[in-house]
Amino acid sequence: MTEPTTTSSSVSSSSAPVLRRVAIAGASGRMGHMLIEAVRNAPDCRLAGALDIAGSDAIGADAAAFLGFTSGVPIVADLRTGLQDAQVLIDFTRPEGTMAHLAVCRELGVQAVIGTTGFSDAQKAEIAEIAKDIAIMMAPNMSVGVNVTLKLLDMAARAMSTGYDIEIVEAHHRFKVDAPSGTALKMGEVIADALGRDLKDCAVYGREGITGERDPSTIGFATIRGGDIVGDHTVLFAGIGERIEISHKSSSRVTYAQGALRAVRFLSGQRNGLFDMFDVLGLR
Image (cartoon, rainbow, N blue to C red):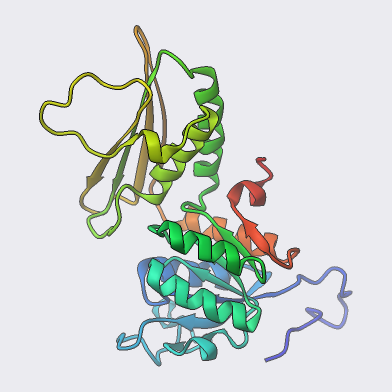
């Protein structure tokens, strides 16, 4: 396939949108469907590849069939086939799959927008190494609202650095496989950084039995799983005489898909490097 340079003979090349050729990982899943629909509706993006695991019933089907349209892009399991025409991959799958995808992206020079969560420290280090060769935007949550919330949490933590106990409560659907959520962990990291702490040293991920009094230097996490909850996050700053709650609640995955497309556009100006949504949204 070739990339068009104008939308019509009467429109100058300077006014025509610059098309970004996008591949989607996990194309037959709920988030994959949302991303495919978002790409299809974006005037500056074109679906160029669709990936799924070998053995999936979706292999060979048209990627947009669920929308009642024919995109001409089949869902494939072979990574090189699925990425050969793409400029950027959007991946909201699982750590093992994402790492395999990134290895091929590095080989082919394909950029990556990563929304996968649950990476180990070793995998994060490997992603940083891969980012020396290709541009990667990685964030546990691509919602614009969530990232504005992270900025607010940084401000709140600095202002309430003493005298307040900090607890993070998150809720997700019954199918989520990692806990706490990547967004909850990111919230904890932002708060810990603002306080000059390392989350690894101050996080408490569960309480049971006789725990003793709360250590004021800790950041607590509570996890809820049930039903079809898209994603709720609340950070509680509990002081003596007052309580501040900063919350974000998602009712649709559309926000994640639109955030991913903003990341795709941001990466168009990058050759390599590891970025996050603060970079995309100019929140540094």
